[in-house]
Structures are given as C-alpha cells and as structure tokens.
Amino acid sequence: MEIKKTSLNKLHQDNKAKFVEFAGYEMPIQYSKGIVEEHKFTRSNAGIFDVSHMGQLFIYGDDNLTNDLEKIFPLDLKNLKQNCSKYSFLMNDNAGIYDDLIITKIEKGYLIILNAACKDNDFKILSNLLKDKYEMVLDDQRSLIAIQGPKSVEILNKIIDGVEKLSFMTGNWFDYKDTKVFATRSGYTGEDGFEVSINNELVEEFTQFLIENGAQLIGLGARDTLRLEAGLCLYGHELDTEKTPIEANLKWAISKERISNGGFIGSEKIMKELQEGTSKIRVGIKPEGRLIAREKTKIFNEAEKPIGEVTSGTFGPSVNGPIAMGYIDKEFSKIDTKILLEVRGKKHSASICGLPFYKKSYVKGVN
Amino acid sequence: MSEVKFSKEHEWITVEGDVATIGITKHATEMLGDIVFAELPEKGSNVEKDGTAGVVESTKAASDVYTPVSGEVVDTNQTIVDDPAKINEDPEGSAWFFKLKLKDSSEMDSLMNKEEYDKFAKESTS
Image (tube, rainbow over all chains, first blue to last red; front, side, top):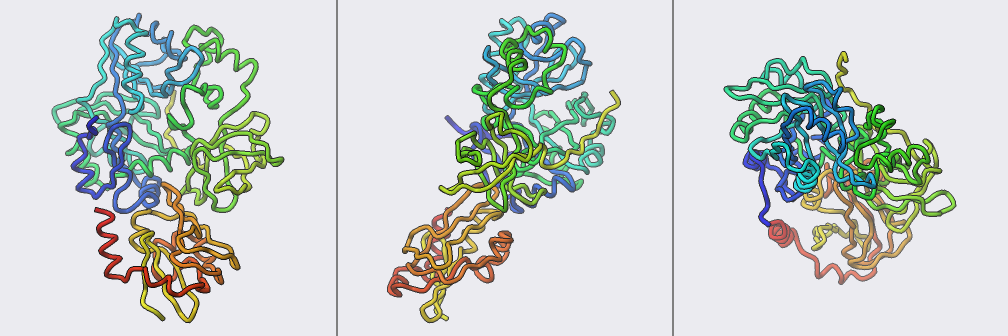
C-alpha cells in the first residue's frame, strides 16, 4: 500500500525532518535539532505537532445518538456539556481496548479523535454498533495540529482570537480567515496546550504563522518522550485488546455513574475487575543509574521470578534520567518496590514509582 | 600517533605504540541522534575483532558498538558513561570509548582511511 502523507509533508521536508513510517503515514520523527532539544523546547516554550494522521470522526444525531453511544462508551454523556471533552476507550465485550480516544460533545453530535493505526477499524466497529443510523464522517479533509507548552496559549491566541478563554478539556469553533476551526484545550505532553482541527488547504499557512510567532515543529520522537514523562499511555504499547482499562490503571476515566449501573460494552468485566481486582496492573518504573529498559524488557522480583514486562521505556530529557512503564503482578506494584530489569542478558536494579514522572501544568477550568 | 582509521561499523581508531584508542564517528552520532546511555567493555577483558564491545542508546534505540581490532581492554572513558551527551559533542576527540592493547597490528590493514570512510559513509546514507 502506498504510504500516505499529511498536508504538512512539504513543510516537514523544508524543516529538514527525518521521516519514519507510522501507521501507514510518512511522519517526521525529528527535525535538525534532535529529540532532546525538541522535548525541552516544548516544556519551556511551544511545540507544534502534526497529528493529522489521527482520525477525526464526526457523528451527528439527536438524543438517540447519546443513548446509543452510552451503550458503547463508559461515559456519562447525557450530563456532558456541549464543547466538553472526555478521555475514553472503545472496548470489546471482554473490556479489551480497541482504541483510546477523546470524545467531545459538539453541536448536533460528537467529535471523536482516534489513533491513526486504529481509526479505520474503529470506524467499522462503530458503524456496526450504531447500525448506520447516524451520519458518520471520518474526515480526511481536515488536518489536526497540536500546539503544546507554556507559550502555546499566547502564540495561538494571536492567530485564533479567543482560545485563551478555553479551560482544560473543552473546545469550540473559532473564526480563522473566512473559515471555522475547532480548537480544544488538550494534548498529550503533560503541558498546557491545544489541538486545532483545520481545513487541509489552510494548515500549512496556519502552521507557518505559529512558527513566525515563536513555536517550533516537534517530531514524533519527542512526542513519545513527552507523553512518557507525563505517564500517558500509548496505544499498541500500554494499551491493546489484551488489556483492560482497570489493568491499565485508568479507572478514573470511567464515569462513576456508569460504574454503578453498567450497560456499556465490557461493563460486566469491568465491574468484576473492580470487585475482585486484577492480577496485573500498569505501573511507572525508575531504573537505577542511566540504564534504559525498552519495550518488552522482562521484569523480575528480587528472588528473580518473572513478574512482568516493560511496555515503553526511554530517557526522559526533563527528568534527566531513564523512565519506563510496564505491567506487573499486582503484589509487586506498590511504590518503591524493588524489581530487576533484564537488559542484554544482565539483571539491573529498578523500582516501582508513581506517575507521572514529570508534573503536569494544565490550566484548570472553573467547572 | 598513527593516521586515524575507520571501520564499516562507524568506529574510528588511532594507535600509539601498541595501544589503540577507539570511538564512534561523527557520522555515527548524527545517525543515532541524541545519545543518552553508553556501556563500555570491562577493563582487563579481551575483545575480538568485529565483536561487540559496548552499547550506545539514543532516545530512539539501542545500538551495539563493535571493536575493529582484537585486544585486551586497558582503559575505558568513564566521562562518557557519566555524561553520554559528550559523545554527540566531541565524538572523534575527547569522547573516545576504550583503549586496547593490540593483539595483532596487521588487523589495522583492512580498515579505511579518512577519504575512503567519508565516501563509504556518504554512500551508506544515500
């Protein structure tokens, strides 16, 4: 299959991007300054991320749509206000995760942001579950740009007047030139920031404006180190169909109202796990020294019995040391528990630690 | 000191008497990106030509470091273990990896000179 390109491909090339294939798209892994500089720039200034490979699914319908979506997602959508967003998952009957996503209630429907590698499968699953009763558009005419970091509000507000008024996990339509863009205050870096959905024809010029105002392009490499420092899950690593939201330690994302009443796909399994507990759970891991434990590194207890596996591991530029996440037998999941990581045939000391590795600085809303 | 020689695995080597100093090339560091971890062979250990003699990790991935010649490790550069970013800063100077007592100096003969290596590096990237 031919590799797909986003509307910013030329701009990435002009900025000397190194490309990788990701979920069928040619995406920038880094630019000339490199991952560590890009990571630090995002934390201190404002980074621009082309996330146009992600799915933007618009579903339109009346109150029946809300009812039908509540049968799928573990969210209290009836009480979700318009323009408010929630983090959630699409699950199978066994509460295995097909995808993690952000759903926003918009006028006449919902906007769901899906992972690039999952979006086509998600669309099929949702079309079947909703029995084609509603208008569903997986919109490839729109690009998605994230701008993340402490300066992002100041920079974006110069270009889209009014975004500064958004609180965390809310969005709205804004005027840009003679068109409308949908901006949400959200992101996946542990920083304050926005995601902007904009027509493909306008995205290059829009991104140039961001750059002229002091933001810089950041590749997928730094996106990964940023999200890992923030303790956030990445689909295909921390999350897949073999893992449940409870095992992933994402219970907070399930609406309390839904936990007591159930009635969503996977709810029986989730309620069972909430009552009986799970045998494994996602944890943060801090290797001793500078050792990096990559994905699939085996975890052992101090008696050298296998107790789990690393799902993501790298060097965290802002914490200035190695960091990892993984799944571990519940009895060893307490913070400060000593564990061993097998890297290149040798076992190295590490300990379980709390998440995030790097403290978030989101702008809290009033509600 | 001898002329700097280069291997196809992107190591450089200089020889003084019977002791060789080995590191990775600037080209290698540019390919790897930001280096955040380095592991070196143990002092006193013996390494074989083209065998692994260490590891470097960037934010993206781990890569083996090979030795272009055989010998006994007589010294290692702890500075780059403590601060791996030094490898990106001065790969062909202060950020050397290890020193070997050469076992067979004829192993040097098959290595490339600077001109040959530059050509090889350019071809291997394009």
